[in-house]
Amino acid sequence: MKTPTSMLAAALCLSLTPAAFAQDSGWDRLADYQRVPSWQSEDGEASIKLRGRVYYDLAEVDWSSPLGGAQGDRDEFRTARLGLQGEYGDFKFVAEFDFSSSDTKPNDVFIQYSAPVGTIRFGHFKTMNSLDEQTSSRHTSFMERGLATDLFGLDRRIGLAWFWSGHNLYAAAGIFGAPMDDNFRFAERDGSHALAARFAWSDEINGTRLHAGASWRQLDHDQGTRIRAYPQAHLSNRFRAADYRPGSALGEAEQSEFFGLEAAAVRGPFHAQAEFMRLEIDGPAGDPAFNSAYVQAGWFITGETRTYSGSKAVFDRTRPSRSLRDGGPGAWEIAARHDVTDMGDANLGEYRASTLGVNWYPLNHVRMTANYVTAELDAPGFTETSDTVQMRLQFDF
Image (tube, rainbow, N blue to C red; front, side):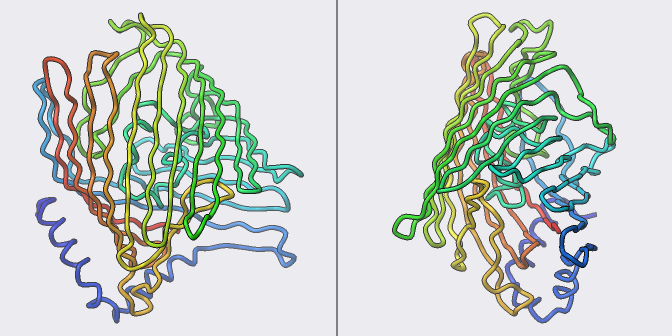
């Protein structure tokens, strides 16, 4: 059996010779799968179609910690989602679940109404926080999002929200209960609840698309929380967590407040974005607070432009100018990111991660990603490190 390293090398060698596959009818067959089963009424008023995505990840991880712990798997189906979406007049529904683990996990499960002013949504969906979190994982520049999105527990919850966009502005606000229970049960997992809001501005000035925004979330915890994340490599181990659950020596988190600032720019093939996020926790002694920030930049070598959706204030799908199906090279992108989180209030020092990435988009709905991630938790008295080479094969429809 091939090791993950040899599989990565083989896949990268293949990706470096796209011309060899340009004439292969296999690309035509793969592109045809994008035409998923769908139905539309004769008057166009109603429609329904299948949707989904599959991510298969491989990784070679060099992980070190004086606290012990064995390294986990080297490959996984990171995501295997399947669902339906449909429309009828001013109403839209989405129901999508992830089958990549033993427990079927709900993702977006909601009903949406296009009101005279804005859109009203009810169901299970993300609280409106962070540009990186709101951008679909299909369209992020790296395999994993910035550290704070996991560390600070940005997630989907059952809620009621209002969304509006117009005149280069975007606004959203909602009230939420707990995350939805697993295994197709539309029920709350616990007794937590939250309020959230996001505001953003965007405009194109002299050929440059600019974005600026802010978001807020207040969360009342049911069983406390942990501040923890993978080191931007899901197949690595998590670094040590700040534990604020019942019985913890640090004390139990009763409520937390999240604040986030976001900025981005796109000019031709170049794009950049940065965010600053802060989480303040009430309950433990001293009311600890954590600050996190990242900055990243990318460039499409083949000349494409990263697509931005003003109606959602997020990045959207970038399509190759000339895909392999059309005899072209697909789209090639390089990117880099640096991420820092201050964990001092939990006596865990500083959490740092740097990522270098290459993305290849041979077709509109197919992507191959390779990332190198080096991360370190520099705590008083000990240091944990993770160096990872990882790759993802991604297909969505």
